[in-house]
Length: 254
Length: 266
Image 1 (tube, each protein chain N blue to C red):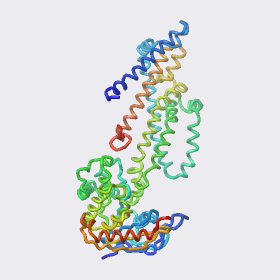
Image 2 (cartoon, rainbow over the protein chains, first blue to last red):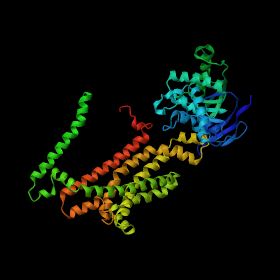
Image 3 (tube, rainbow over the protein chains, first blue to last red):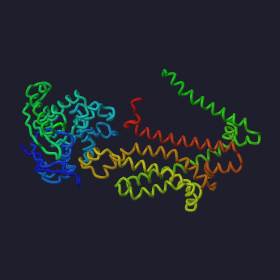
Image 4 (cartoon, helix red, strand yellow):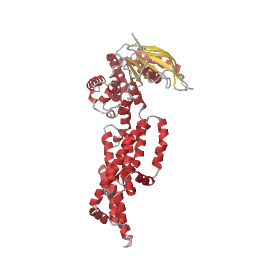
């Protein structure tokens, strides 16, 4: 499997502030779906920003497909915690946006947007405005927009955090389905242990002050994963294991 | 209260308030001595003054409207350009804001004679005075809009390699529209007032025959009180048309996407 992202002893601090990340090293292979889990402030989002090229490293090295990360490169797309759709554009125009910014012709970007909207089952909402959609639909539109560039790497920063449990579980399954079809390498930030275990083949557990990776767990549950996966003993035991490692990493204050 | 009851009250209360207002008007007049009554003409006299001076008032209104529109439009264009410059960095804002404040704090009534010396009396001076009055709320609100763009959206544009022109045209300007329209609504209420005030201090009968402010001076010198009241009400009507136009424009531009037009309780 080719290496998509390679971090070596990466550190990050903002200005003169304390270290946000320190000694972070890992490799992501093509097709990996890696969850980053840890307490608030452990640098999960910062790590994604470094991979996206939105923020420079303070120390260490980082290679994305063998090169230093650069913004505007076609291989990386991002889904934020909020859907970040432009409220004045229809859903279709929102999905077309990354292609429009790259000067792709109107006809071509319409075809791509329609394909992506059908992938996230939002074709019927193409001409609606974001405010006319539910939270879950908006997030699916945001994912469709990220996928419109056919990225090699997809960064998802707690995309389902604000959604209700049922919608979240449903979108988890949809995301895995899209991952199976599009075969990108994914980084998924979450606070939910069950979500991390359900989605990923690898889980990186982080701790704060400064942020670092303290455990890596391999999730050997077979794909495709469904509702039955969530009820299986192997799933529940992995959830228990990751939870106890998280608790040990960040003991509750007395 | 039931819905139809509420609806009836919505129409009935302003009508009752209007009748009360007329009653007070007539009441005050009734208490005045005969030689004082010319100070407060009756509503009927005001209406007949409307009829008597309608062509003069219409002509003056159009002149005022012309000055208001020129000043207002110039304020929109220049405030947009300046807001774009101000949004570049906090340093630029810190350098220019004190002077903008200074301009805003200087009373127009004091600046008007200076403008009168620089530009011709009449339309040029009136337009400049209107511009000065409308300019500040527009530039402050638009700048605020341009610098308040959602950080995540800016990141998104950077991530997708947007250039500066794309970031301004496709993100910052549309995102600033609600702020711009807030400024525009304030400027629209000030525009006709500015034009009338400008006309009052720098109006001229030369060529265009003057606007409502200039007409007010003429009626005042002739002690035509009813005509003065009619002039004031024409100015009020003009202001209303101006604001209504801007409110409609704001609705037309924003209603399909902006939350302020879709409140849960509306």
